Length: 218
Image (cartoon, rainbow, N blue to C red; front, top):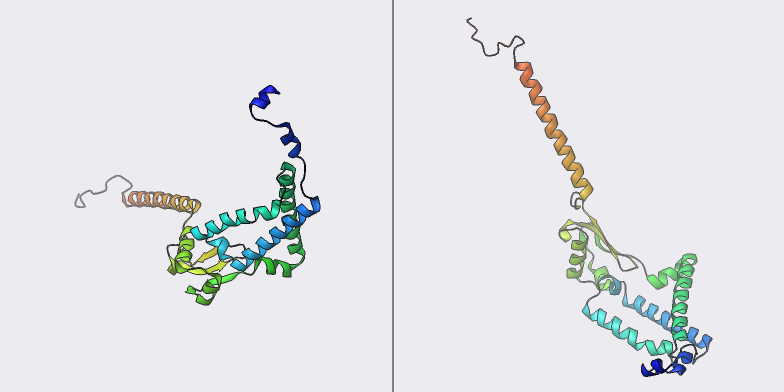
């Protein structure tokens, strides 16, 4: 105990770690209320907030976590309170996910709907403005998915989860490693078949008695 005292350990801190300063119901209500409020805020911010997060969006996320921290923990700083809050958050998220499976209208309300930003190679600017995505952000997403530019794109959809699904035009899709090796194998077979055919033709042109190229007068 003297050693622990030398480290600055106070036995009362061990007891305080497991003592809730608020009721379990109060902790649950605080956590669920903040969870739902943040979910609504992200829904209002749009799927672009998840799809193309820039430096300003990152600042908002970092500050938001600090702003709502006190709203969740309240006057409680115990270890058990933090573990309880984490468990409530996970349970609330899992429960809400299950509810969205049974009630499609709830899923549409919380997640929104997919938006087609490019259709048949043409940018749909009204949808771009509603989603809050710029042309530069769209070009960056296309390049990350294998496209060389917007001229290679057939359709682009912004999914409710924030992902951009790019469908390239025919013949503009990037080749995969498996396709490359398959094409290389076909090329080797074609070259080998060409050599075999050329050798057979040379043998057919040669005379059977080995007198190829002999003087006809003799």
